[in-house]
Length: 319
Length: 268
Image 1 (cartoon, rainbow over the protein chains, first blue to last red):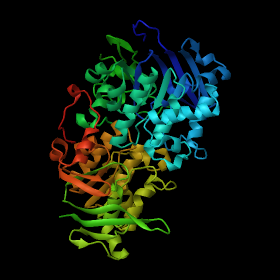
Image 2: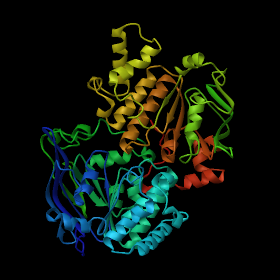
Image 3: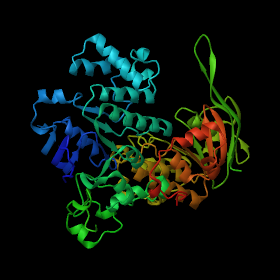
Image 4: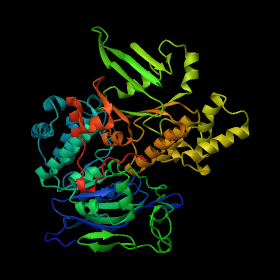
């Protein structure tokens, strides 16, 4: 899955496998994933809950629990992350690769003032003094339109509303102007007004810092606004990848089509059945039990991902 | 008229010394007909859920009236309310948290049946539970599980089955899908719509997701800071919003490339 672009990718993932050993069973959270993210590009990773999206992001930062096994290759800016020492990783995390975690309600330390929490990143990586770091935080808060930024530094997370906490998390993620920002479900559970604000804010931050972004979401309308390319993930695998316009207008994989059809504006047609457990995957194509176009071949063989158009990859026999 | 809300007010007092009131719900009027879906939209914290709780008398209104099939609910005794609540039910936002964590799904489903003495024998209870499970698209293997062993979508189906067990005439769905994936959201909403049509249930659908409200509602009411600012048919609200706040709210819908959208497809 190498896209023909003139520059070399910032992040290149090849054959990434992240499995978890839970008692006797093996949970295949990420199974043979390859993808590239180019400088200043936004790649949206779209899929349902439990398909392995967040584990993929955590694999990039090597923030996985002890019962995980990880194979393959993740090269970031020429550095092989899977072979990096803990020391090297610490220099990457937060500085080169920023992360904006999923839940604004639980991702901040409730016992520390928010200004301190953002400052910590800066003092650690940028070796700024306390005073300089404080000024930088005020600047960040101002840019993210947090009202009364100097005062907000001394607030505890519970004193802020959901939207403000989201802004604090974004400011932590982008504080060191990382080359790559991993954003996990930035709009989950937010109301329409806040969702639009967060989406606008993320777009502006990525442009301001000239960062690339891996945007994890289940919401195609968020992906449509922000993403250059979209990768669709199902049961640990990437089933389709291509430019955002291509995926939205001419989806190739039946899963992508069904996912789009379940959007409110597209008729709300539900996909039958449930997504499979990652510890007992169906034989053949993983989407086959729920697929409306499945044929006998689909349950016998596992399809490989193949090129179907200009930089458009689909994992399906029917395309 | 199934349920009618008139001049409904809920005031909370703030502060110990300088007491002042916050009007969470401020003079709200609307009604829901049999078999109709009224969508209630607004930002987080605008008082949508407070309205729902007031309608079911889960909290007492400061003033105003709620009439269910002509009966006044404010000031009614708890015993009488308990009887009426069989006919008016609610589905909450957090499916995992609205089920008892230490009760198996079979027990959770049997509980309302026992409470209202809707079944006479153990065998009848079992049959009814299976029938409910079937109606919401779950299978018997789920009966012996606990809520944490279910996915969010499955747990929400159980919550809906519990509500259906009582054959209600009016259901409040309070953000039933805001924590769910888009695909699961479509499953749950089509289930709610299907059941609503089969049992001609009046539905108050509360959501902050404008696209969802547009797809499921017959009429839409817009709430802002405790007040109803606009109410009208779905077409009126989304095509020709009158109030400035409604205009603002509809402008926050994220634009998808128009070529891929097929508008005006109602939820079937």
